[in-house]
Image: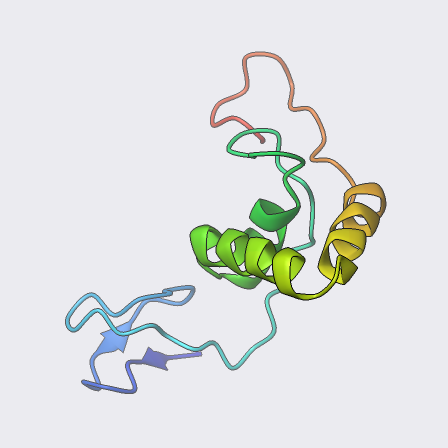
Length: 105
């Protein structure tokens, strides 16, 4: 399937998330396959819930973290309860083989 930028019309390789010419974010029409939500071991701040959600959906992790904190402050604790439920419910990233490169493979 050919992929084209919606802003400048240049051809892109499959799986591209940004246009190399204009920098526009490429919205994929096909659902992301093989992207399951896991809590990564590297790069997490508390439990890896925000990082896992951001990576699985292609979002900016800083934005997800800020929205989580703001949601905890203004939702009366409901977002905090949802965060704790996600901490319990989302599986942790499996350990890779020792010496495997890149990590996580």
